Amino acid sequence: MPELPEVETVRRGLTNLVQGRTILKVEVRWEKIVGMSEAEFDAEMADRKIEKIDRRGKYLLFRLSGNKTLVSHLRMEGAYYTVPAGTEPGKHDLITFHLDDEIDLFYRDTRKFGRMNLVDTPNTMQVAGLAKIGPEPTEDDLTLEYMQKEFQRKGAIKPFLLDQSHIAGLGNIYVDETLWMAKIHPLQPANTIDLEHLTHLRKAIIDELALATKNHGTTVHSFTTAFGEAGTFQNQLKVYGRVGEPCYRCGTILVKTKVAQRGTTYCPHCQVLHD
Ligand SMILES: [Zn+2]
Image (tube, rainbow, N blue to C red; front, side):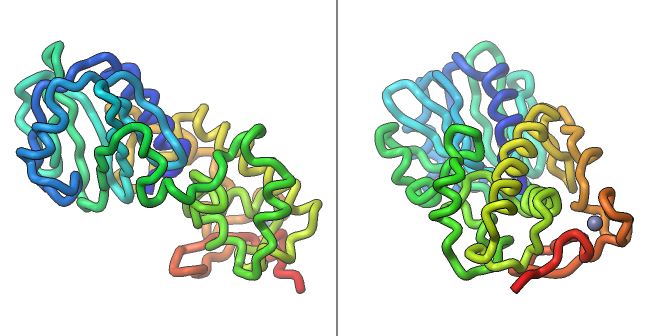
């Protein structure tokens, strides 16, 4: 699943390619994604201009003329790319946005899990998933004071961090990475993490996501950034995908386990579960 750095990379790519374009017509080949019929979606979208593309957590927010916002979540495999007008869609190209300037924007989704919600712009933050979203992982938004208060919960830290209501934008890859950086066991209860580790974790999250974004995100499985540009951050991952290899810090062989049904790689020497 694309996480914050990958979605931000998509946002920047889309901004370069389709900001300012007008939607002429929309074709929908899997209506569940847009939650309405093709005819309804086309009637809503046609003649609107794509004024700007924002992002909040892992959500893309297409700001459209007429005070509408298309909220798009890529889930597992969703991706956008542009093609010359008239290009025949492939099997997994589920939505075509015909734009002016002889450009078609395809939404591709091999798993069909992605979702789009068209809402009045002032109601954007009422969309499920955005209504309770936590702060962006930035120096200004993710304060240590917030973390000290929010982390007073008994559950294991890994599922806690995957829950977007606590901090926006983290998924399986960057949770494993930042827990390794901060030397925290994935099963450590959130409320037992001391101030020193919490301070490290905050810095790891902010720095890691910024660095990954700078490197256009991580390319894993079939996910690539929009427009075929592959992120390079997988070359800098410390634990994710490295089970059986030595820890970069201490040389101990990294192990893999399941936490909250998610494959989890960590260093059993650096990341000890404390009472
Ligand atoms: Zn280690």
